[in-house]
Image (cartoon, rainbow, N blue to C red; front, side, top):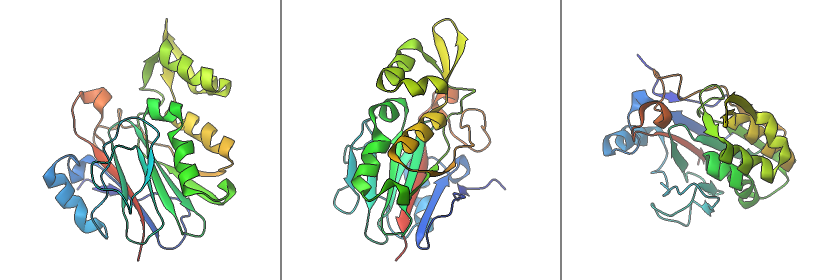
Length: 225
């Protein structure tokens, strides 16, 4: 039987819980998928209207459909969630387990600073923060054009190390490498995950790049009550 969820392997503090769904649990954009996810959570997730931006909101004070690409929670049993099918979910928690956050980091949001915005919304010293990088399209499968590379390198020249040339004017982008660069620049040194590829692992993951379909997985994080 296929595994329906992935539980992050990271030294999260007691009380911090997280999961990522696989395609075995179903499409999280559908009513059926959401109904299969709900028993695994302490409450209904706060579903954002993801716009590939940098907005980070307090999940305890917004409604479903709020336009944002990240959320955070300090209250117990408030479930922060994002959907993805190649974009990278980035989970964050402070070492005391008093605040958690999650970001939807496709290339646009990652380039624009969604990780930085989420960390700023969480607050506190970055050295006290942990991060986990969830399933995303891997560096061997994510070919982009020169415009995308230029957007990253113009913002931070160190991002050039995350690109590998494929054919004239095209590059493979390592989203995980950029995320680690951005987290390191913030001072977040405890970073885990990042060993997935949604495009090449069709048994476990939906992939928009591979299938050009609308199905999505979900990633969620919360502080247990």
